[in-house]
Structures are given as C-alpha cells and as structure tokens.
Length: 452
Image 1 (cartoon, rainbow, N blue to C red):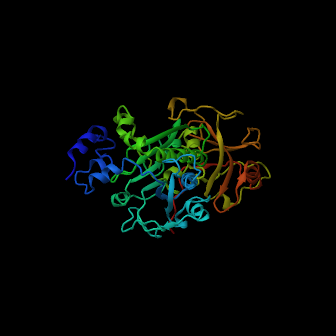
Image 2 (image 1 turned 120 degrees about the vertical axis):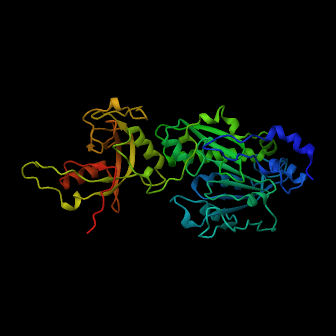
C-alpha cells in the first residue's frame, strides 16, 4: 500500500497539470512520484531522490560527436582524484559502460562514441543493425563485471526512444542532456533548428526522461550560451559538448539538490501558449529533404545563410546549377559544351555571409522575414557572379555571389559538383571561363525528368 504521507508531501512540489502545447499532450512528471499504479515500494520511490554514498554505476547512451565530451567527463570522474565527488574519499563514477548504434548508423565523419569507447577500453553494447526506433525487444544490459543493474542511465544524442521499462531498470532512473533550452526545440535536430530560426542563444538542458513523450522530462539543470552570428552546426556542437560535459557532472555531483529542485517545463515559460509553433519542435533533417536545398526565389539572403550554417558539418547544403543560354555571343566565342548546359547538383561547401550587390563589405543585418516592398525590381534570384575584389579574412581570394529573393547576395567561397572535386572561388571562376559559361545560374527545383 502506498504511503499517503509520502504522496501528500510531494504532491505540491512535483505534480503539475497537463498543459496545451502543439495540442493536448501528456506531461505527467517522473513516474517515481506520480504513477498511481506504480508497483515500486515507498523505499524505492524515496531512493530515487537520494544518491547512494558511493560511486555511481552508469550506463551511457549516445551516438554522435556532441556526446563524446560527456562520456569523456564520466570516464575522468572514475578516477579517485576526481575533483567532484559524491562523498569524501569516493570518485563520482564507478562502473561505466556504453550503449551505442553500430558504426554504419553514424552520420558524421569525425570520431564517434563507438570510437571513443573502444579506444578508452570501456565495455560497449552495440545495438543490433536493424534495431527499430522504439527498441522493441531490446534487453537492458547489466554490469559486465558483476551482472548487477546500473544505478543510472545517462543519455545524449542517442536517436532512439527509451522505453518506460528501460527507465524502470535503473534505481535512479535515467537523465538526458538535450541540445536546446527546453521547452524550445524538442526533437531530433535542436541545434540545427536554433540556427535556422535565427535564435540568439541556445544551451543544454539536463532532464529526467519522460516515460511516454520525448524531451518532456523534468528540468534538472539548464545552461545558456550565445549563438555567434557566423556559428555553424559543427562549431556549435563543439561548444555545446563542453557545456553538456559540465552540466551532467554538476547534476550527478549534486543529485539530491538537483532532483528535489527540478522543474516542470511548463514552469520555464510564463505562458506556454505564447511559444510559436516553429520553436516547439525540431524535426529530423534529411539529407535530401527540403531544408537541405537552397530556395533562392523564396528566401532572403539571411535565411539562406542561416540555412547553410545550420547544416554545415551535418549534411550537404545543395542547389541545382544550370547556365542560361546566351543568344548573342561575342564574336569568336563558341557556345559552352552541351553537356555543361544540363542541370547539375551543386553542393555549397563554404559561405562567409551576405552583402548588397556591388558592395565590398558584409551586411551585419538583413531582415529574417521577407519585406516585399524592399525587393529591387532588378532582382534575379539564383544569378551567380564571381567577385575577386570582395576580400575578408575568411575569403582572401574573393567570393561566389548568389542573388536571393530580397536582392541581397549570399557569399560562398567553395562549391562542388556532385562527384567532382571542391572548387574555391578562383578555380570556379577559371572553370566558368574555360567552359565559356557567360550566364551561370542556380535553381530551386530539379528539372522534371522526361519519359521516352
């Protein structure tokens, strides 16, 4: 029988009503404290609030590069000399093992969690190659050394749904380090969406793991950092990885305080209904999806540049290159080879910002939303110009200008036709001259295929 005194003492501190988000969703807090049919004893409920006075045995779940600093911090915390400890004379972390996808599931070229774990001699439990998103029939591993259960699960950028029974397998439950300032940008791609939507700040939120809804757990810790105007996905991952490293260790080292003072996400906003829809969910970004393609005729230069920054180091940002034919060629100039007049997929490798046509300085600000009244009549979205006179620190050899919907140019310094080598500004300009391409253009959409 559940203790009435225990439940009453916690009701005001932990229970929160469901609130409207993108619809009516269940935001019931952690199961230890609110599940009416929980089979756990009162002692097990209370134990979740108090960390054991010994090193924590941790099972780590992760896949991508942002998780490596956190795993590295946990590995360092196994040392008896670790500066942060649960109790005097004990290291913070005892047993540490890793659950991660097999190598081929990893998208990034840089070192992965699997690489780090193997090089650090940590026990690794790789998921089966065809494991489904909900990890159906997956059996939680126990400690390799003793067969005992782990105290706590630590999750960061894992990519799978953690089932309620997996959370229940841990006496202290499981926590997640999420790459946004929750409740903003719940979902698979929070870092990319923060850049895409022109956010000025982002951060790491450490939460408990909700048994039913992804990224809806109680907030244990939240750390905020500014987003530099030229930050890319790759640079922000590095910054957030270090933030997550400190935040997770802080939560573990101060577990009792962090857990008892945790907050419902509804409490982090004065009015949850005021949060715009586009800030509520950070859906998965696909390599051939709409966000991976430049839409010159629909977006401002700032939007295009932010789009490139959000994907740089994640998936290629691409467009479709096809020159416009020139009717009146200069005398003695032959037309371009017919093969180059066909549409080609072009990857936009490096960008430095945006500028007004003819200007030799970067714009510091451009409206994120399109102002139809400010569009010049001469705007020709997709028009390409090689400008060897525009030079900044990140573009010492000039830039490749591409006109956008608002009449402002996005500035690139490297492009690549699919299957070919990367060309910087000088090489691309030479390529255009060599092939007699006088009117280069890029396009929003691929050409329709014709049936024979």
